[in-house]
Amino acid sequence: MEEQIASVLERAFPERDVAEVKPSGPSWNDQNRTVGIDFADGKTIYLKLSNDGDSSRIACERAVIDYVGANCSVSVPTVLASDTDGEVPYLATAPVSGSNLIHPWSDASITQRATLARWVGKSLASVHSLRFKNHGHIVGGNGDSLELETGPWTDVLIDTIGHMRTLASSDRFDHYFDDVVSAVETNRELLDDASAALLHGDLAQPNCFVTEDKIGFLDWEIAHVGDPVRDIYRAQNLQFGSLRADAPEEIVSAFYDGYRERAGEFQQGFQTRRPIYAAVRFLAHLGVYDKWADFLDEPREELADWMETEMERRLDEIT
Image (cartoon, rainbow, N blue to C red):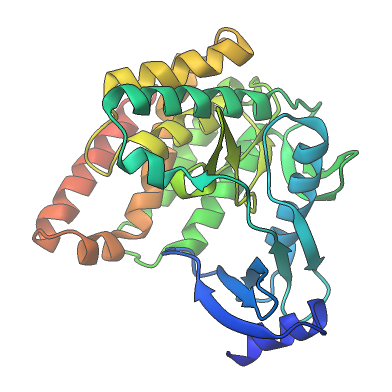
């Protein structure tokens, strides 16, 4: 067991012996990492560590878990211990009840997947029902309230683009970050008119778990308060699509139906703001071009040419 993990466990669980440290799954986020800890007494926890010493993501996740757990019907992990003041900020949570969405999804028929997609939409709408007076970054809070560093939604969105840039492992397409920021600035009036709701920010299938007929959410470290349309588009893409292909229409319709069942109709501006978020979303792919190139079995330059064409198309669709 390496020194960093051992030091955290000594602080958080000083009287418990460790039987095994296990990886929790693949991740392309180098700022944090999560491991599973099996204790000698048979209990298991999940431990998230900040690799760079930045406590802001841990503070955000801890606050949002408490707030959603107290104010929303969506299931979240139980926090066992957390510290944002030490040399290695950490968050320790108990295993959730239910299975990760990846597992039932992989074996499901198209009809069963539509049911799961509906549940995801309904849970996401429940999170978006938590509304605020202002947009902003979450810097702390508890079950009663969230502490926000507020600002216009355009500025908050540009900040999240900047964060995506720091996560990028490749600078092959770095200039597109500036192009998308410029497009966002051009549409400031349209964007700043959006509702201010709690957004999960990273609703991929590994961050969802199934409990009976509901979906719970994990991994709230980049949650923020902003436009629900961004979260809807990002969730749809992360959950049901792939790098090169959109999700089947039946799945998307079920996801939308579940969302509307809880929230009613999508808010005004859904279609006009969506192209902006499509371009923002694709920046995440461009930033890890090198990892996609290693992962996919195709010529690197052909992938680069396709990515450039796709990004240009998305920018052209922004009015």
